[in-house]
Length: 77
Image (cartoon, rainbow, N blue to C red; front, top):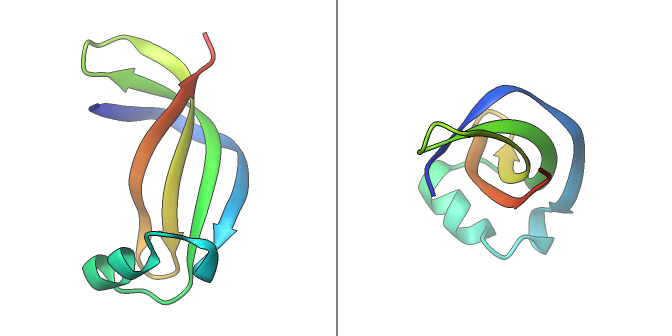
């Protein structure tokens, strides 16, 4: 599903850190970085249809690499 973040993320929480992340080896091989974290937050997203909805978004993040692999987990409206 294609989407674009509209505005800032809010209510950001850490879900998992380093060894607790299943995709850690894939992330390190593709993007580099050492200490990966999986996070979740709330944001408004623009879908491929142009519709804007409020959603819970998950992503991975590492120092020096930035935010990677955003995905929508659920919609609130």
